[in-house]
Length: 248
Image 1 (cartoon, one colour):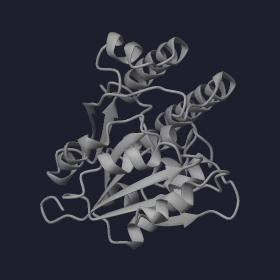
Image 2 (spheres, rainbow, N blue to C red):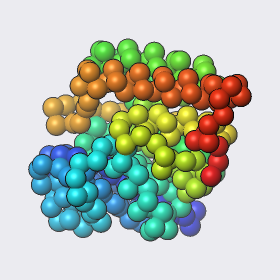
Image 3 (cartoon, rainbow, N blue to C red):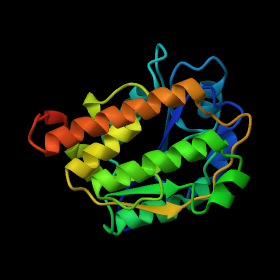
Image 4 (cartoon, rainbow, N blue to C red):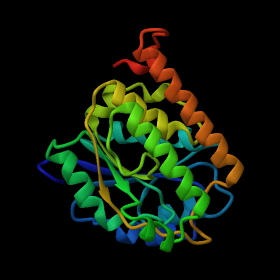
């Protein structure tokens, strides 16, 4: 706990058998009250490994997608009585040792949402193995989103995030896509509901076992994010009111 607030780590997993244990070992157990893994019908032994590590493990009966996986993660976290939810990809790409810092900013009510920023400098991102095309796309999309949403974040595309319970009780994340664009929809909805978003630098590692969507899926993700951003701009200009950008 931090400030008497229950900290729950959720891990949306798919074929993470090779990296799950390393990620789990890095999570500071002294401040985390519960860890929940949702396995999206992996073809490897992710679920079995998760259970052997003592992690609360939920298994989808079929592959439902990254966004659907997160929906189950958050539903389970809410059921468990979480005050702060930390989402960590179990692919060992992010440094889970920073969990107390990312959760602490939320616990101290400085921000409602805190993201792990992989791109403190160009050199660090690229030397960590981030593909050049992903770096360029990340910079372009983040610049557009910062400008149009009035934010000043290092990046919008991190898989290491902390939320207060209030966030999940405010925005309409249940109505989001079941695909990868879920993350962008979540943040844009948070902006629409005037929640406070911040970030901290976090080292990231790219290697063969780390999950990463391919070039075509990355293009689809970027286009989908921009389309949802356009929907928000139309909503904000009162041209096309949409409930998804309003509080529950």
